[in-house]
Length: 122
View 1 (spheres, rainbow, N blue to C red):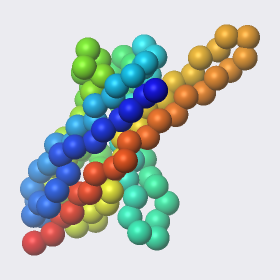
View 2: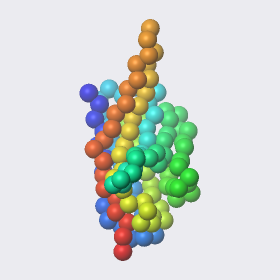
View 3: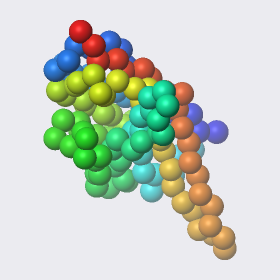
């Protein structure tokens, strides 16, 4: 069974920084793509950043230039460095891991962590 555990959330002042970590355990495919999503009350969960198995990244326009996603494949850990935080970044941040295996038929695997709260406030 795959388990994702987020950490690093908390309260930070506007303009400050936080670094989120997500440690994955269990049987993780070598082609796994990992990402960060966030959700606030009354809104859909939205993509923040993703990184594939060879380090190709994608960012939401709202965080581009401020956030950086990275991964340590040996540790099965993904990070989200968040700089220049503003109150609109306040949300629960979720870690995601997904991959696809095709053997006769297609199998999609999609796992989520429990989330970590990030609050940006004075």
